[in-house]
Image 1 (cartoon, chains in turn brown, cyan):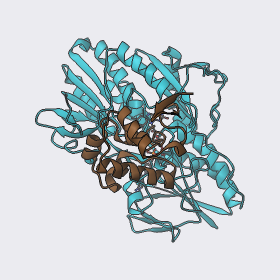
Image 2 (tube, helix red, strand yellow):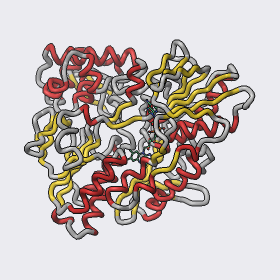
Image 3 (cartoon, helix red, strand yellow):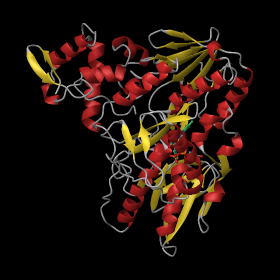
Image 4 (cartoon, rainbow over the protein chains, first blue to last red):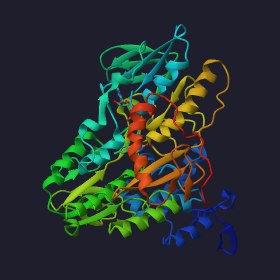
Length: 105
Length: 409
Ligand SMILES: Cc1cc2nc3c(=O)[nH]c(=O)nc-3n(C[C@H](O)[C@H](O)[C@H](O)COP(=O)(O)OP(=O)(O)OC[C@H]3O[C@@H](n4cnc5c(N)ncnc54)[C@H](O)[C@@H]3O)c2cc1C
């Protein structure tokens, strides 16, 4: 079992390196995960995306695709890539404490 | 008489039609199937057309050859489904009512979704191979091409047959080697994924094959637009990749009819129970094949495994029982790797592709995640099985549920 130490605590991770127990998540943990992904500070725009992801996950049991984020979160694709470089859907899911989106097989 | 309507007579719809026709009581059920085209395309064959391995003739047959007698066949475009009224409106003005509906309208490419893709360079130096038109245009282009930068680009996931772009790259390596101009063709595989494939073990192994074949891999590239003037693809982060020939796998989406019906997600794929294959929001609708939003691969082999499950669940539902058969996401894909060899992967929702052996009574074993001649024959045999067994709804010697036999975990 892989773990990571953040804010002085050990957290269990799944095979993709995402948080294993969602109950471990809080805003402080999100900030630390963001740093691991090279995002030093989470601003309001990051939080819009993170909160939208968590909402969709609660409703659907899966994190949304980039296309859905673009359509519904109020943040367009260009900005999504600026906020979460390389893989916005995957990175934002990780910071939001959610498993890797399943939609991309 | 009760009415069963099947929308789409591609791989999945034709297969379901034949399976259900064999078991449903003809005095009780009238079966109708609707499709806009009269030609059935063997889509896995499109991959081979640009390299002159298959001709157009090899991939088409009339759909009617696969329709059993006594079935009501309608050749028209579907305008929309009205699930609350239990009816389907067709573009030719007909209204078709149903008691049970099976949606098998598949997925198609949407190059219009990417800025600059389907514009002045389309079928001049930008091609797709997911349509017969694209595959044939590319074959003609390759005939006289003297080399340059060949870029293979996946726009966004999910796509049908997620291994096809890799196969295309491997076959291109072989084709240009045979032509004697491989040194003049710079092949680059550009993907939004973090690796060569979606799942870690297979991704690493397939990534090694790319390297061995001197195909460059560019990961995490999300294409934003095509700069036609300078022949470059540009990412959302303003990274640029120049090309002389761009082979694109455009965004794949469900049919517009699904959008018009208000039944799809952001890709026009229909929310479907990943185990029972029932539409999540409708009691009397099943969905199969590429039209679903399932997290399984969009492939003919997957539709085949789904068909066995759907058949059982359909019979349960119409007899008033609970649908108890569960689809496990089983996929089984032969990956053509060039020089007469192939690679096989076998996986499901929970188990990623693993190395080992794949036992197949009477024919196998095939090697998993290894390059062998036997796997190539498997791929070639697949076309014969497709026309003669698969879409006719006949049994293949492969179980619907994935098995761990032979796999090394
Ligand atoms: C290049 C390529 C390579 C592939 N290689 C492989 C492979 O090696 N192995 C494998 O297993 N799979 C492979 N596939 C995938 C496979 O072809 C598909 O997954 C399979 O055909 C899906 O079947 P389906 O019935 O869901 O959709 P389809 O076969 O696409 O059928 C959909 C049908 O619905 C009809 N339709 C849609 N909308 C409407 C409308 N509004 N009105 C009327 N009719 C409509 C269409 O005309 C079509 O006939 C490949 C696909 C491509 C493109």
